[in-house]
Image 1 (tube, rainbow, N blue to C red):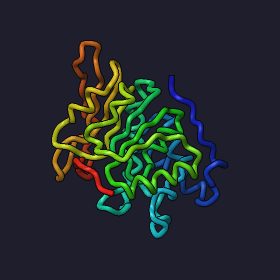
Image 2 (cartoon, helix red, strand yellow):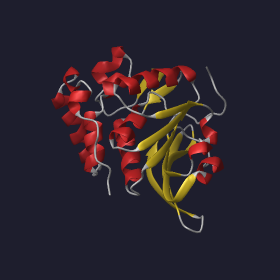
Image 3 (cartoon, rainbow, N blue to C red):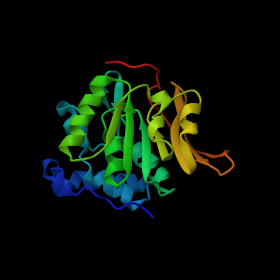
Image 4 (cartoon, helix red, strand yellow):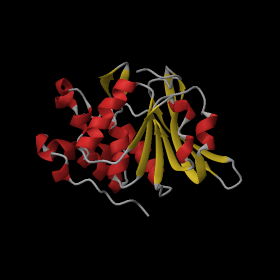
Length: 225
């Protein structure tokens, strides 16, 4: 069963940006192969312009990644949509996100009614994301920590979304995935990665599938204030 979209347009100031512009982005995503309607509705409703610098707001609904400072980016909407629809296929209730960044991916997941936990290693980015969550009335649980270790206190998770790339899958995160759960993560070098989907079988092994070629910032260890 797919979660019902909770966030309503009137709750997020949808009039701040033309509805036509948002609809056009959704049309582009649909043409690019995103087929899950709840995912597309979440992209339509969550105000991406609130998750980037005001100077870039005019580009908020382009299908492109944008800088958010500290060497990080807000992901391309197509990538956010592809990762979201991939985890929705296992009908999750509780999701862990590794790499909060601007908070946009977490907000899309929360708009779908999911229980979202998110970890960010850069303190300033997390503080900004928390302000956005409060502004939108979203109850997203967040933690300033090294995302490579996950958030074991709340494990297991029905889904894990990793928004930074590592050369290989991180074992600590796989251990926090529930049976039947799905992890989606970019894997590879800084030159380009494969967006990988892993679903945990009952015997503890994983069914693996490559979803797309992507380019993410690296998944780093440690914490910054």
